[in-house]
Length: 276
Image 1 (cartoon, rainbow, N blue to C red):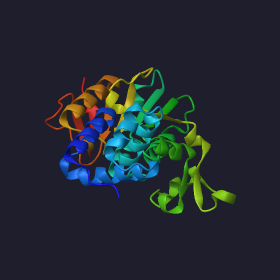
Image 2: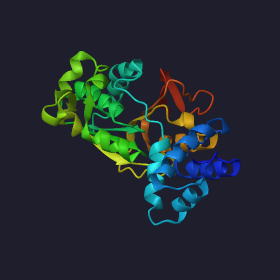
Image 3: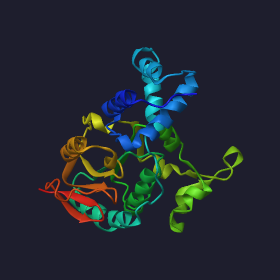
Image 4: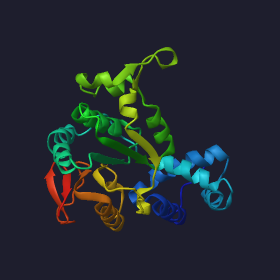
């Protein structure tokens, strides 16, 4: 039986997690972290947290296992068209403004940061395709990134259960085809959406986003709530730098920049626009 996580061990893993993914575990989350660690110890037949910590740092497979640990502790709750009001504003306010600004280049770049299992990224792609489907001249790319490799693999497949797609407006179900054979009971994303998306593992707390061109719209919803003030500030600074002039940043409903960063103006429903 795995022993309780001591205070010193909790601090070791808390700092390790923050260093690699920026998540700040408060002491109130000690039991949660212990459960995640215990499952990894069991997998390797280890009987102490110290042994597992040493494995992560010194074993040649430690880097891969650290990635698996991160997969186990990151939160990946998502859904199609989650926070409906934001998608309404995306369609009726944000995209029309961006389209008007980019008439010369006709290049649209969107980033879904923390895309989890892909529902957000495909929802964005549906709204974008609805607006630009009659104008093939637009160069549209949507980057869907996450630190969880398992979630990215799931998202890339674009295969969702009947329960998942129930949240999609009926008129948009044409963007999916019903699976057959081994995929019976599932709905598969059609190529018209898939070709607009690029899935990539990216750790946003490294703060160095080497994009070839500025980004017009960034979705980063319900991600920063797990970071402390210092990490949040660095991340917002990085978003500001990669956003196009007058670009948009969409946050989670419980996240806000009001009184925190005056470089962004509130549009509505946790949508912010870069000033200047």
